[in-house]
Image (tube, rainbow, N blue to C red):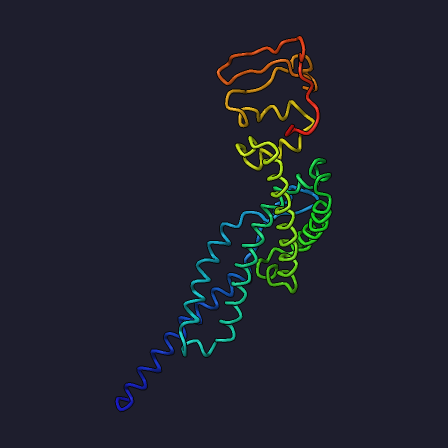
Length: 268
């Protein structure tokens, strides 16, 4: 053997590296073949993705391992098909979860706006219909995926990525229209620029409920905390004074124009 020491060394070295790669690869395959995802089933109509912390930690570490393997050149030739297969599967899981998490957050935020706000539904009828369609698709998708708990199986199912991308596009279109609508309201009443969009949506959604809108007066006006609704404490339809943030109370004259009736668009 001493006549072929260099060849023997190369063979032993390659065998050792292949053994390490094989061990890591089979460990990753075994882990992800059994990796499960939890679902939040607090809603009857739509299961939601649960905590993904553990999955994302494993995904980051194992994706780096797979990237390292693919750079091993001739040392992975014996298992290259398997390396390519699991590199693609983990890449798909990564891209799917990125879109999935973002969609779920935005859907949870926009669902009550487009499905429960009469003001938004009347002002944005086409987008409200678009949201209803994507809402049904999302709920069907989540009911379907929740039948399995294996994250690789869920994310790599045929057509699932396209479905998620399609409803994401529709959701983005709804959000753009909503932002354009809010911008119009801000231009009509520039003090709306002082409040966050979430607060403005709450204001607009409750435009016919003065008591609810009054909760945001302090954000819109520097010196006012709320109005005096003592003449109509149940509905808040009549205001007869205002209260400052420092506690000062200013009663409005009962003579002309007298107490103010709160009606019409909230920005007016």
